[in-house]
Length: 343
Image (cartoon, rainbow, N blue to C red; front, side, top):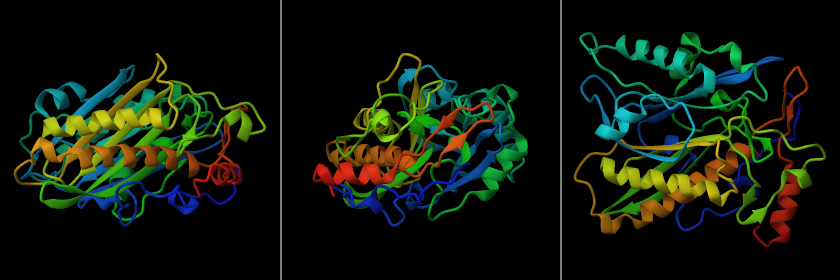
């Protein structure tokens, strides 16, 4: 890790939330009962890790939560995808990690859940683990992640503010020519007769030209070095809400989450694995579809801001072989936003 200027989130730069207010921490953890934990590895040859999104509503007496999936481009190794899509049910925490470690992480997650009270007689379980490729900055073929990192991320899972940028599963990712990583955001939104929260967490690792609030931020103009190479070209998006939406409605939210990638400049390359998983911790009757427009709109806004935060909060990382992904220069971002009248 190299020294960088202090990092700022999009809200810190003075960019407004749009139509709906941000949540208390502007994070997926603003959704009640949703926790996030990281296990991060930074050495001269490894920048990698595991990020856990843990719904506390998943327990022995409530084995699944309604969930939906959207696939923007299926060039990825998302474990558990077919059963989640078939049943509209999430049975485990969602873990994010590095491409070639995804199977070890899935096995470790499976073992962890089977050890929990109430699971002693369980004979089928669907671990959900997503990935992006951190091979530009990490020795990905060594497959360094496993049981200890999974348990560390799950044990560290907490509510409140979420660490972003070059942490957990985002430790070694690259996005839009800059250092990418983990980002999060949330919105408070009316759904049916109630007020609810929707939050997003992303693992960014994709190519294109960054746009923030509609203002272009090309890496080759903001960084006085060649833009970092995106290996694998993927993005994982996890959306959570306490609105009592069902699996079909959550799949609609997940599709909006994929759409948000274009808002920040993704070029959706052929080798990109772009996935969104949306789940609900709410209970009660699902709202009428006619009332869902605010929730869908808020999903777009929260995911887009989470994607931007993943870059704004990332710190420069260097591999021992010389590969370098630069943090986006915040002074340059501010000046362009001021010039465009955004802030």
